[in-house]
Length: 315
Image 1 (cartoon, rainbow, N blue to C red):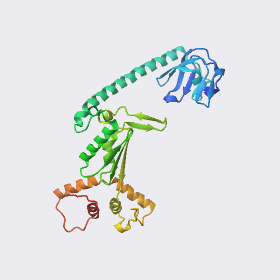
Image 2 (tube, one colour):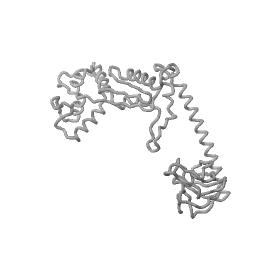
Image 3 (tube, rainbow, N blue to C red):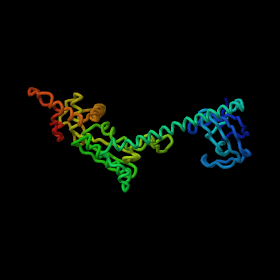
Image 4 (cartoon, rainbow, N blue to C red):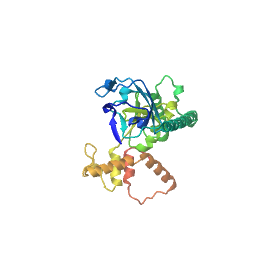
């Protein structure tokens, strides 16, 4: 099978001609209708961006079940389309079967879209009763969606991690959550991630909204929600001692970096510190103190000492 790029093809296209494009995942297709007189010699391109000329329009049905209507000749005879030569012209029967397949696929897509819409509506109606302590957008129409989301994030973090302080700031498009030590990043993102409206698609250079997530529609949201956890020197020491390095406070330099460890060991300590949840630690220790008798013969626990210096009470 020989492929000729659209801007290099000077022949006259026919109904039944097989073509190809990578655009939108279309793939291989068949021209099933042509309107207007083709004028390939009149097609011009400016820097490969702006195309002019041509007088025809093409209707194409693809194997994937999608259809492109009224594709201008100047666009088809560009770098993103190809003509498949040395292949047979599709018969009327094959074209009809392809159009029936495309029609069935369209019906299926519409059915799924309706199911998704119904699911969104049901979720939208159920959320207020699941989160009665959060501020709804409908009750604060004078505030931006991101500001409402920031207020609700503060509420959720206070409820989930009592005693730990967070900084939650917002602007028109983003929300930044910052804290030191305390819960792990995952524990926080489990709460904050639902306020993000979508994600940036670097392949197509566009922002894609998550249509399945209705939470921001009810309780506010932002395009970007970022979580930043700072690791204190005390937590670094705790992580190092958990890993068996037996580090003392005098090993911390003015930049709060542990001296005597190479880059690989420092990275290992940092990763260990990031995984430590002081929220889980304190909750676990509280539970143990109410169920397990204190062992007065045991030596001083370095983790307990470090937590105490950080002002975290385990009682």
